[in-house]
Length: 200
Image 1 (spheres, rainbow, N blue to C red):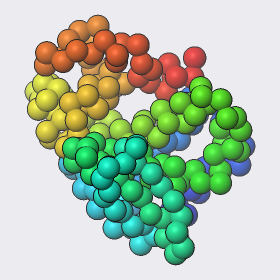
Image 2 (image 1 turned 90 degrees about the vertical axis):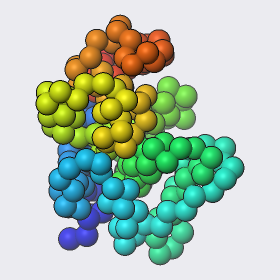
Image 3 (image 1 turned 60 degrees about the vertical axis):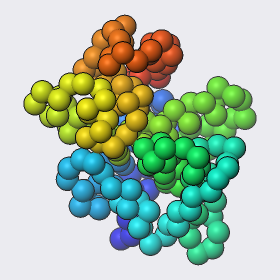
């Protein structure tokens, strides 16, 4: 069975609660890494970009961080070349979640054109990207081993410090009200950081 089919096979045929959607996204991320034989950080972008049904191109300027379109015979993902490589890596994984959910999102998450619904779907794709690039057990293992500085962890996983800080918050490894590495995280304190909080 092709990797895309195996990942989509995890999707049910019913509507998901928001919590279920996030739990499923993490399962898909874990399965993707297993299928691609990735066992340690940093996760190479090629784990996604070299899939046979994918083509990735970098464009500058772009109005967004990434975009996805089916152009027969493959999916084409455009990444914003004006953004740092670590952001492009995150955008690639984010867009891949949109591909996994193609023609299934309405059934899984409901059909709505409201800004809040769109935001929820984008948060789900961000969560998937975080699970791909910063798998829960790997981040926890690194943190417990003594690598607890946000910037050092970000370098280890090849993500932005902001993405790593959100991930640490999601995993309950840092206090949402504490400053990390001198970064201003006021916006993080107001953002949902776990699938369970998102489902509330």
